[in-house]
Length: 277
Ligand SMILES: Cc1cc2nc3c(=O)[nH]c(=O)nc-3n(C[C@H](O)[C@H](O)[C@H](O)COP(=O)(O)OP(=O)(O)OC[C@H]3O[C@@H](n4cnc5c(N)ncnc54)[C@H](O)[C@@H]3O)c2cc1C
Ligand code: FES
Image: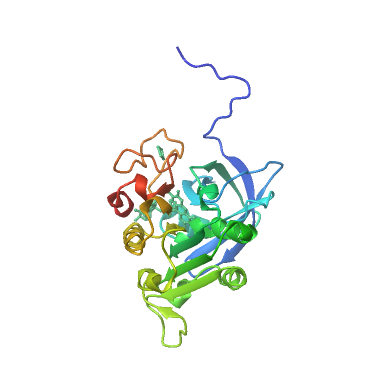
């Protein structure tokens, strides 16, 4: 027998309309869209994502990259990859799109309280961690040391340039470039080259996002530097369709769904292979 729709049921596949109010160029390939929510609140926790619908193009998942205190807007930072993300780069203020969410399991913020918080981001992975960085700054007293270790390849790849300057006033910001130009005065090399110069160990909790191979080498290196795999959290990226645990598109080795069991996972709960596949 077919299940009857009950009044008040909300169809989880129907997106809500939002309007783009600003488009900021972060780098040649990366833009941040600010989306205006109409008469509704999107209550999210850092680490969660939305499915962005572009009418006539399709849907794709993006992490919310703004403060959870902002009741009227959310930001999404999007790097150009294929058809949908290229279409995103043609969007202009005033254009209407849709979002579904918030979706997925966020960072367990209560487990971070009273600890040293190390946030390690490479490339566009910083977008998945931005709302956590903002949360740590807005709730600075809840944490001991807070450090952002951010790695990019080229100087032009660095995003959030204005924010990084602001964040430096409240937390330690360490930037390293793996293909630095001669004039670069900051650190050179990969993020893993600089973990040794940070004070790490028991009492440190780490949040990591980057490409799968890089995240798995960071997780390995953090364990070698004395952080338990139970205190390391990764934000995984996998191809998705439904975003709500129905289509099996996002299953990782071990049977977990990235869309509902993640995207944030404790490294102790998944295999290193699942991170780097
Ligand atoms: C939970 C989650 C959060 C995400 N957050 C962000 C974000 O904040 N900012 C951002 O720029 N991107 C984010 N992504 C990735 C984003 O969803 C993809 O870049 C997007 O779906 C690509 O769509 P497309 O049609 O442009 O490219 P496609 O034509 O689908 O793909 C282009 C290329 O990118 C690869 N690719 C596409 N999607 C993925 C994926 N999910 N994992 C690995 N490789 C992929 C494809 O294999 C192909 O090589 C997130 C993904 C997930 C699952
Ligand atoms: S995206 Fe459909 S089950 Fe995860």
